[in-house]
Length: 176
Length: 87
Figure 1: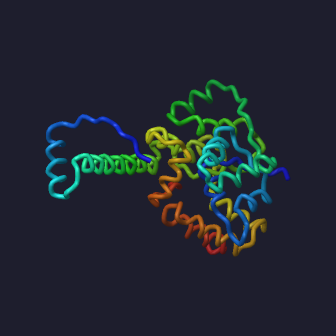
Figure 2 (figure 1 turned 135 degrees about the vertical axis):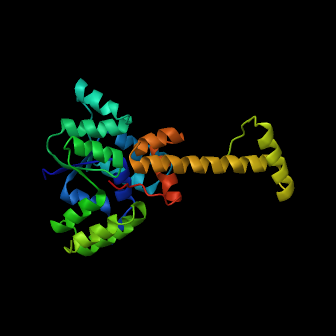
Figure 3 (figure 1 turned 180 degrees about the horizontal axis):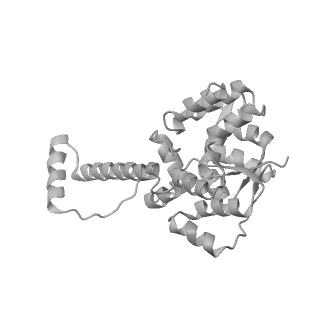
């Protein structure tokens, strides 16, 4: 499988807290694409979560340990890019997501939930998607049954602003 | 988990706490603790508004809240505050 997705932490945590019909959402995602995260995202999702006993952190830890989810070191050295990103006043993890997108040419989309980060990624033409967009696409490409996709979207609803999940459900049904 | 901290308050706050303590049959310390808690909740909501407007990222909110990223994620869930934002 050559398709790659880069995940930010909040989208990965939301996915790992979502189980539908006995399937953890990251396992559906892993049938669709390889998942790659930078080191700080691993720290935020797994290391900080395992320490506090969160079940989703243990699930992600197991998938990282078995190399189903890859942690990619950041090697990019590009002072102008650093300066442009730093001017936004974003944090280390945000910078790592941006740098990983910059240094990895083969990824398909970067999955984020964060408004400012989404806008910066969009301005760099780094192909950001929200997690519900990914669910809709997985169903469209038959990597996930439609019924499970809809249930996953509904399970994600409390974490999202009004309108987003309703929109995605209609997209999933092909009505918009 | 709670922690003890010595806090100096000005005269009007002190008198308010003593008055409320008498009315509510509680200690002034309990009233002050409640006031601080409400102030903290207001601060979290203010930071969340900034996050939703896209002034700061979720990580920026975590740093300003004195929480780790993961702690903040769980705190927002407890308060049913959306983690994903509109664009």
